[in-house]
Length: 207
Image (cartoon, rainbow, N blue to C red):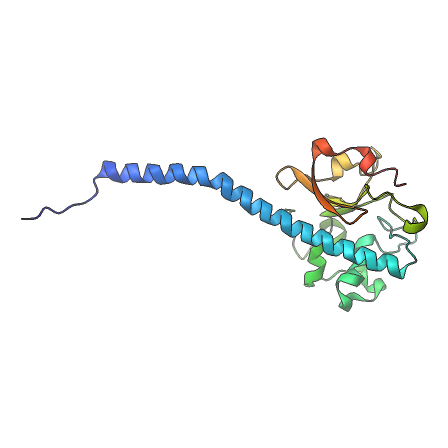
């Protein structure tokens, strides 16, 4: 009579242990691959935002948008550039409220950034990318802004500066992509920088 074969308890435990070891070896690689994918998507967002900036400069005699709202309550750079990202939002005065249901507005959200809910004010949730605050109202061509300067970067606030009392990049920039921050430079290139690669000279002076 043929004996019935089956896993013993010890053999089953050995198989489970091997699977657990393999999983522990694969998880870091899978996690890294997932974050790399998010970084690529983030760069895609920044590329489209930078394209919107090029259109804005073309329509405004090469004058750059403000990094934040000014004393008269004019729109921030997010609001101004959204006009070029979503034609439906063509009325700048309407942009005091940005529709969370508009997929284009989510270009301002980094896939590795914090989650948001529809109840949050745009000024607080729309902050995954920052503009260089010194890049406001200069005539880009006339002043000849250096191509090596950062214009946009991964951040937790609307703008970055070198001023310790006003959104310094050391506090505002977020190195959330495997300890790197995605940055757009004046020449249109996009790079991922480590904290050790950052310094004030990449932000100011512009020219």
